[in-house]
Length: 289
Ligand SMILES: Nc1ncnc2c1ncn2[C@@H]1O[C@H](COP(=O)(O)OP(=O)(O)O)[C@@H](O)[C@H]1O
Ligand SMILES: [Mg+2]
Image (cartoon, rainbow, N blue to C red; front, top):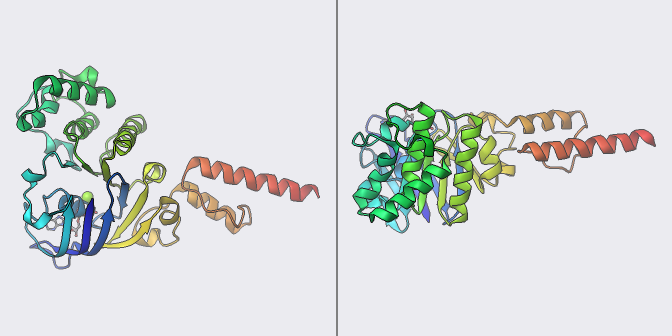
């Protein structure tokens, strides 16, 4: 479980807190998406959960932040290895620099943990298959595309089987197909009881997969709830988050009486299609009377 209580953080060079009065409890096994504009504090919050901020960056904190009962202020990132997996925004920063094939790079963290060789091979093969990286097993991590490096970074975290996975905009360089592969892998993790915290500004997939969406705005939590509530909130744009096009289309239709007034606004393609079909049917019925 992740537990923030009235947590604030100010960087040494910051004029105002990068995170302010954060109250957030994420239970084990929840898939929580955190969205917000550039500078809202997403990467900072991801860093706090993984023990990188303020330990490596500096900064003053008030309140408390705990992961699995551990007070993060008293925990070094190395103590969280195996417990919290972090996928950083820029995958290049995450390469070990010490291994020269994808297979070896994926095994790197497991070697450091002293995992037995047969188990190591099993886990690496599994992750490569899940992320469709098997064909690249013997390629250099430095000679693959940015998108493939992003998948590799995700794989390096997955292979450690952490209790908590923290992903900071992990699909920014991926096409729709590869993004789908990543979200399927996250779905599998959630089914295994892994807690997933995904920091994203693109919300199409979180709308479908996340149990919960938290909006950060200027370091504060502006909204927190199920995707269907938070992502249809009329204040979304004020918080610097673009509404989903399905929601926008339905809201415009509702303004012209073309969306059933008691039907919630949609956040997925399926819900939009269903709503427009229902509206069309009732318009036809009304017209035929
Ligand atoms: N290492 C750092 N030192 C000082 N200020 C930082 C640092 N990292 C981020 N900030 C500042 O903290 C705020 C939140 O940034 P960040 O967490 O990167 O937001 P996001 O990931 O949502 O774009 C911004 O004002 C940013 O300039
Ligand atoms: Mg960021």
